[in-house]
Each structure stands twice: as structure tokens, then as C-alpha cells.
Image (tube, rainbow, N blue to C red; front, side, top):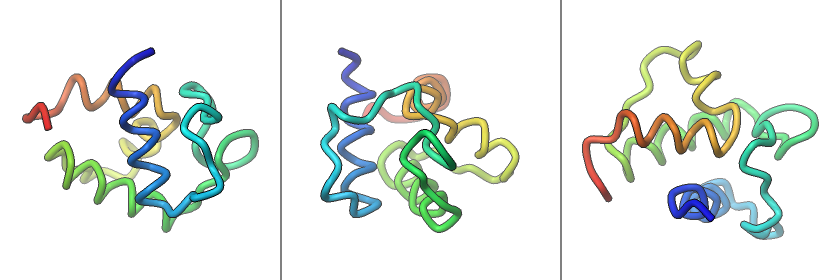
Length: 88
């Protein structure tokens, strides 16, 4: 399994206080927001922005861009691979 995806799952669970969620139960291609996924909301999006900044030195400035990046754990991992300035 992809190391970055597994790391992101754990970071999301911790950052969003999803204690009842197991990393292996998160489908990397499932939507993070709305129906059918984790059901995250706009407050969670702010936490994800902070997570990306803190752990990967990635700043999301355009909310429309964030919507595409945060679609799923897989899309976040792809964005990090392409934009991270650190291997943290």
C-alpha cells in the first residue's frame, strides 16, 4: 500500500478527532466531504489546510483549488507529491 496515503489517513484521524475510525477503513478514493465518504464539513477543511501546512509546508490559498485537492485521501496524496517542499 502507498506509504503517503497510509500516513495521511492516520494524520486525518488524529487532526479531525475521528477516534472511532480505523485507517484501513478509509477508502483512499472515497470522497472526504458529503455523502458516501467521511462526511467532513467546512471546519474539517480548515483543519486539513492546517495539517498540510504544518506537515508538508503546503499552503492552500484558493478555496476552489482546495475542493479538488481535498476530494479524497488519494487526491491529497497526489497533490502533496507534486507540491511538497519537504519530505517530512
